[in-house]
Length: 169
Image (tube, rainbow, N blue to C red):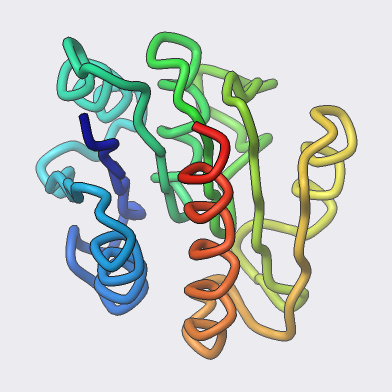
């Protein structure tokens, strides 16, 4: 039975932006199924969490959750119910005032974060704290919030994560 990768896009992006297209191709090359739901009708991150949990209900194997910005927050919070094999988080919106989960905790076999040094939306200090508390892998790169100049790096890191999942279940 194949594993599925579920993407969760950010608040102001869509389900098939440049990063998701590139990462989806890397997943398909490794025989993962790909789902990228459209959350643009929901501005509330907790409603997005509910949608993601519902979409993952009844899967045969734990999925891989991938999120960008608000979508990373959604993936982290949903991981408590879904228990994915891995989380791949890009510029995660953690420790954001007004979000229901003020101290989100990842529930996954492995968590990898990529964040830009020059992110002007999610301060790198938020991500340092999150990574330190949760003992996750963290890659800091020379880019801003969208990580648009780091797509080859994102694809390489994501590919290594998927290869590890394929090798070790």
